[in-house]
Image 1 (cartoon, rainbow, N blue to C red):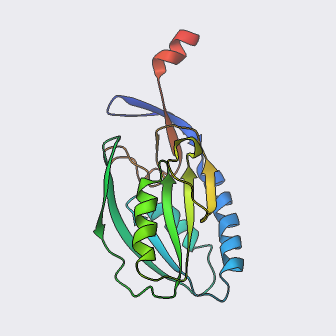
Image 2 (cartoon, rainbow, N blue to C red):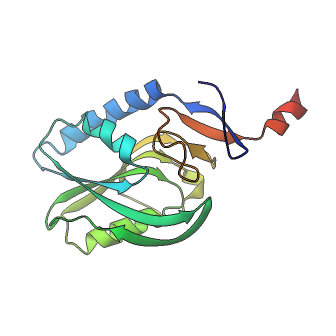
Image 3 (cartoon, rainbow, N blue to C red):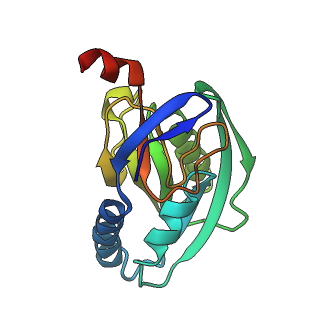
Length: 186
C-alpha cells in the first residue's frame, strides 16, 4: 500500500480496503432492515459506483432489483454541466429507490439524478454514497441515508474513483498530496 503517481500527481493511502468493507457491511445490515418488505431498486450511478455497488449488493440479502444510470458531470477535475447519458430501463412507478453513488461532493449530479427519478413517480428515494464531502455541498439533502466516509475537500482515486479514467481498479482509496510540502516540512 505504497504511494502512487498518476500523470505527475502524487497520491497516498487514505482508506484501506478492510475499512471500506467493514463500513459496507454495516450499511448492508441497515438496508436489509429498512427495506425488508419493500423490494427496493438500487440505481447505481456509473462509472464510479461499480465497486461500491458490487460489494454493497453482496451484503443485501432481501429481494431487490438493480439498474444503472450514467451521468456526465466532469471533465478532468473541472466540474461541468450534468447530462444523463444512459437511462434506467425499467418502470420505477411506486418503487422504493436507493441511489448508489461513489462520491457526493457538490451534489450537482445527485440533484439531477433525484429530479429525474422523481419525474418517474417513485415511492421513495434514498441515497447510499461511499464518500461525501460535506464542506463542498451546494445543496441540502434529506435523503442521504448511508454514508461510508465523510472526507475533506480532497482529490481521491481508487475503489471506483478515477483520475482521467485511471485507477478505478485499485482496492484502496488514495488522496492526492504534494510531495514538495512534505520535503519542506522535513
